[in-house]
Length: 127
Image (cartoon, rainbow, N blue to C red; front, side, top):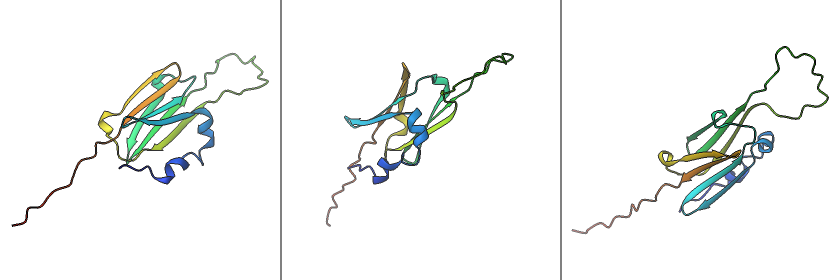
């Protein structure tokens, strides 16, 4: 049985800024983890996904587009966010070679298959 460590639920406690930009749902279905993340305003070229030591890390960069030469803009309010964002999720032991991702309509979906548990039980013959 693959248990998710307690800190799995606390990974985002100290990462509130990214939570507002990269809201996520994570669920398990049929031996596969699914991470669904809202990423409006990003393109798939802006997103990088890495796996290491049981973690799935999603990084994204949104660059500010400035109108060169248009100095007549006097912003009254700027609410759009720009910069680098990153979130990591601990999923335990999974098959890194079979992780897949898709991006459609501002939603990133990462599919993470659990590693198949191997039966390492062995019966020893008594001689």
